[in-house]
Length: 193
Image (cartoon, rainbow, N blue to C red; front, side):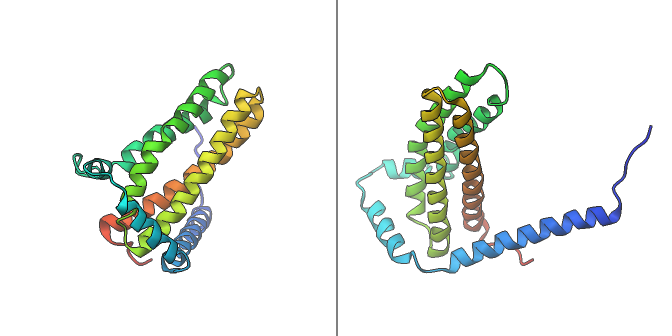
């Protein structure tokens, strides 16, 4: 039996590429956290969300009965549906199931978004700035999936699959942004690299 062991230079090259990508990503997030351009809009939005007459629903939306935020739990519905739809898009004869999953994912957005906004309203400025980018990326994902579903319903499955791939890319970005906010919130930052 012949096995291939990668040489040290190939491993070092891949590690360098990943380290460079990580450094660029964290640098971009650091810049986003420090920019104050959107702060006036953030303050208005946070005050508006705090002013909503949610009563006891506010604690439920924030996940107090669970002991942790509800938003990450609720996003599992759209993410799971859309990822499953992408898998089915490459399986012959599963167009109807993929279309259904795209629609269910879109239906699951509203509760996840409401819980997310309620959480976001209590974030400090640095996290709120990244959270706003997270929301914008979510909006792009929802738009892509809405266009995907529309295309699928109009009998254009190939176009629907393309919009779905765009939506999945936006979901990946928004997940990375949301994960950054959650991590900053939990541990207060990242170790220096």
